[in-house]
Amino acid sequence: MNKGVKAEQAAADYLAAQGLRLVARNYRCRGGEIDLIMEDGACLVFVEVRERAGNAFGGALSSITATKQARILLAARHYLARHGIDPACRFDAVLIQGGRLEWLRAVMGA
Image 1: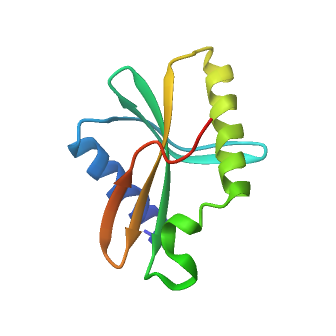
Image 2 (image 1 turned 30 degrees about the vertical axis):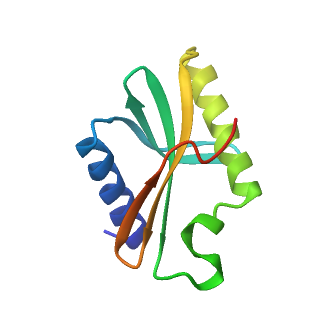
């Protein structure tokens, strides 16, 4: 299992322990990808997982650039249209840095 897959699994396990339910992982469409799609009650949560060894170059959060956010939003819109649903949505990030996991809710705007 490669490093990215391990980080995504750790994030999925952590979020499940917090009461979220996994809906999909690694959802892809032309031009975008979402690491995890979870349900938090009636809210659909699109999750970006980032792992960094340390804070060099701004750390894990700063690696979610405006371009990356646009790709996540594109994929989220595609997912919603493909499934014909319009639930409340949220964009979260799970950051794993220096072995510490941090869950940030609503870090990206739609």
